[in-house]
Amino acid sequence: MYSDKLGKAIMILKPYTKYVVYGELNTEEDFNKIEWVTGENNGQAITTTTNPHSELTWTLVKAKMDEVDAEYDAQDYARKRQAEYPSVQELVVALYDTEDKAAIDSKRAEIKLKYPKPVA
Image 1 (cartoon, rainbow, N blue to C red):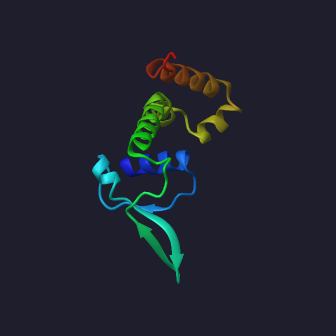
Image 2: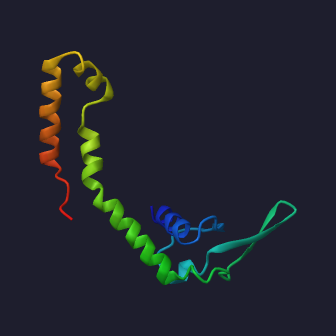
């Protein structure tokens, strides 16, 4: 998942940046091993491990990855709710049956109590 966070952080800080990461990226040393794509020659990427993007320092990228992580964690309740909410098929059936609708409303209320929205 760290590479997902890296990709999101780089996309936010400098969209359309191309790079290659081999293995894990956990430290500044790992960050300094990123191969940055600086061009193309006969269909082959030209890469360098010298970072050509001054706005992509380890400190800034790490801070943005931490921010992405915090945003993901803040939505944990929503992912848990989604997993337990009634299916679309159940909702469609409930449109025509008041007892089913009442049961779904009750189930959704229980799930919301079980996984409350965090207070900001």
